[in-house]
Image (tube, rainbow, N blue to C red; front, side, top):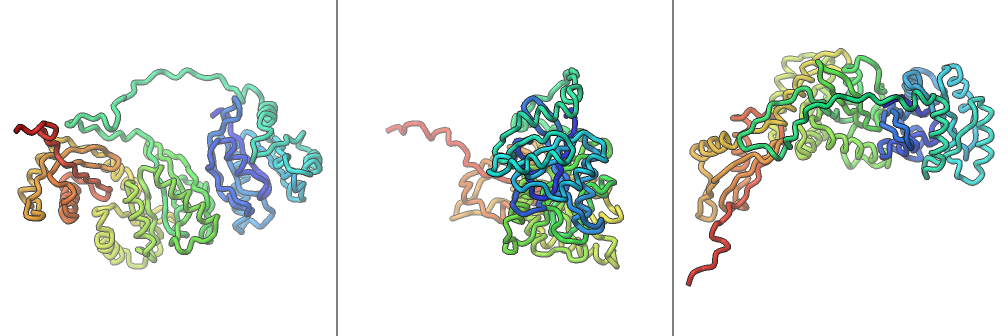
Length: 472
């Protein structure tokens, strides 16, 4: 992206609506409640022929630095400092407030380019608020309607004028052509076992109950206060993505809202936050479920792990707040026992004790994420699988159902991410769950695939005489 733009303004003037309009997707949560946005959310914006990075920010409020609103304002001011241009949004329908004038003065002192945006200008009676915006001394306001997409051409022209055409339209550099591996995931040869690509960017989602320490963990990884944190539960609402480099590999990490029991989620805003977190899980490759070490294995923790496994994602457990544990050795032994007993569907799942507050165990956690992703991408040759299947049937033959023994004839891996296998057999509908678990556990142990979802599908073998006419 050529330049960076921050959207600022007091609460409920339509900043997130404008953000969604510019990125072309409903990424940011939008609600009539003031103060929905709390963290900085970046996105790739497109405005006619302009391409730039846009940052949605929390509403500016005058309050003490130790309060939640004060910490939100600090995050917004960091976004202003990092941006090349600021879109200062005011509400033309409601008119100017003393807060608008205070923050207009703050932007003037920053000395960076500012475009004054009068949102909701399509509303009846908005002319007064539009002309009042001139008194801020930030130049001519641009009348728009973020909700209906009006005034976007004028906004584009104002941005180009404020930042300059040389910045708005940088010269494109021709990148050298690179060899591309055109082999698709479903086009592998039966005996082809691709090497794990440890240079490919990795998408990781951080989930957990409210106040488990997810945002603090990510801030510790980044080495800066990038995400809003505090003692209050439920601070994070939007799913925020951040990128950073870990030992030469690009990591895109998603911070998500804490997810409570479904019966307790009543408010519309919390439902939107949870839905946003679920989308992040589906988009991610590996999911880190953060447990509170002082109260681990709550029912909601187990349901979150089960959700990740059912979605087919690679899962890693992070026992956070390890610095608060008084007897680490005894607690660690107890956690290992409970993990094996309560999470049988993810046998061998990697679990790491760590502390987002002190930084203890972070390298081990990231190594567990990489190792789990390696298993999640694993592909096994058909020859190995069929030799293994023969051995499994010798050790434990398929059961007889209704007096007829099942026959497992052939096995192959049909996909990775997560590993999925197809077994050709007689009467696939009659294979009992107990034998499927036996095969699944055997795959985990013999091919070293701990903690990832394994799918086994059964298919009836083709009858070569099915379509032939019977001879009389």
